[in-house]
Length: 303
Image (cartoon, rainbow, N blue to C red; front, side):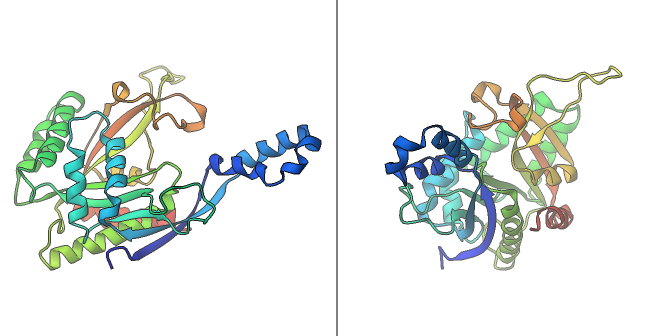
């Protein structure tokens, strides 16, 4: 049961590397095709490959994949991602990993169980004193003090210190080529598992607040509005659905990670070929707002 499939979502994943091998299927025509081969290969490179993704319960085999995704989120921040991954794997009654549904036998992938993403909730309040948990709170509070309006720091500090209203760290990470449509079943499944954890008195039961740290980007060159005034601040969420969480957040602020990474998305691409600066957006969402967020996800992500 630990590795049984829970949900399935179908989406488009752009994977140019897979297309490169298709030109080897007819080697005998290489000498005669000339420029036609070049045109054909360009078309193949721009193809969209339809990939099935499945959600599975978290298992020990997912440790390296989850840790890699955590490192992508925290970058050079002083957070013990190994310890955090251990906790995520141990509390596998909550959370899921995303894997490719069927890996072709002739695939170049060495690992058929490669983790393409994961979702889980870590209850920061009940794990008070654990190193990685304290490091996350310190990271968030440090950036809050430097990047938020007056009074926000005190508000967040008070909420994180109130043991009567637990705060959960909602982690939802995936590769950029995994479509956002998979987020809906993942979040629905997570909410069901959190409710069951609360009912059975297991770790990471329902929290009063959800804390999120999202990957966001902003145009490197700010545009000045036509009528003057300050440049418009527009942050784009790498996981598009997280904008709905942002709308419901009672505490929200951004901090730059420009000095910790070479590009917005690990150097792989940028939005509409516009140079982007990488940020992290911190949000605190009341748990009673989650149903409204789920309705929004259902409205925009149902295929």
